[in-house]
Length: 212
Image 1 (cartoon, rainbow, N blue to C red):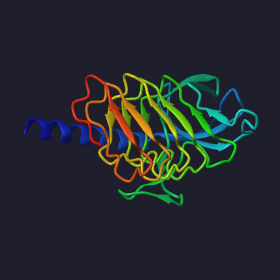
Image 2: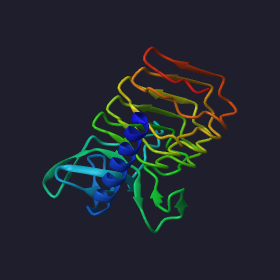
Image 3: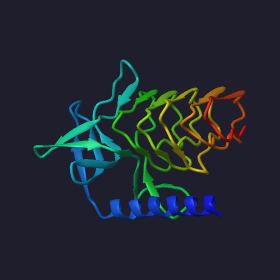
Image 4: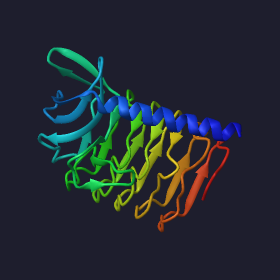
């Protein structure tokens, strides 16, 4: 019963945070590399970053999500990626629509995340067919459902120690992952059903439930 209450409380908190963020002002902020991001502006913090436009790195095939962006003379810290809102064609369960964190582009194979990041929203990278490599920094405390679903080229996924909350419906369907290592800070692993290429899941000390 206690566990059920804790889980329900977590769901309520996440829902409340989503509702609160939905009321924040949506802005388009340009980072130091000239990339413009759709996001929501809080008090000294930016939420739900999603690439809008800007020149991609045609040499290194990577995109770096900034840790801070200066907007109208004020520096804001980036806290979450993947824009939750209406008016897009990318729909997932729950009645919401999404702007993915980065575009599905031949010129983006690697995504570099900042250590200021605390949340990767639902479907943040869903259906990205070029992304191959991503490291989740230990600052991330929640990864939403279907964040990496149908990332068909994703073969290198690293969770740094410190990553905690993973949505029950996070899955790795149709990815190219063969091995995944789960740090002890993640107590229960996500479902790996549908990951046909996956051969090994390594659960480090501290993981309480290792779902293969």
